[in-house]
Length: 153
Image (cartoon, rainbow, N blue to C red; front, side):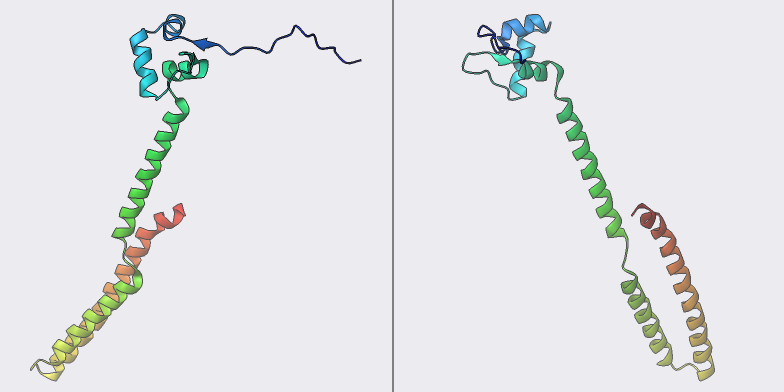
């Protein structure tokens, strides 16, 4: 057998708060409560009263909104840091082309001088050897700098 519904059972009514009643109940100055309601863009209903959630939001603040603002600020900061890091890194191919072009220009300049051939050859050999050392050291350091960034991915 099911429960019978009584005709004299009413649906619960929602509590509506006047500014004065809410200030008294929540022990807050009426003017302070009014300012907080206005700051939160909370307006009274047609009856001139506020709902309990509206009063609670004004009295206790919006925890969800505060957490959301913090999360958004952290996301913006991380995006800014990532953008700065990307501007600091140079594509490997670009660096290789630049260094190669530089060594070619130096080699051509040495070749075009009036130095004795033996001196030119020693200079070119030295530059070729040192160029390889410089390139190896550069790319080793670059890879080391990229390792923490790759570990985060």
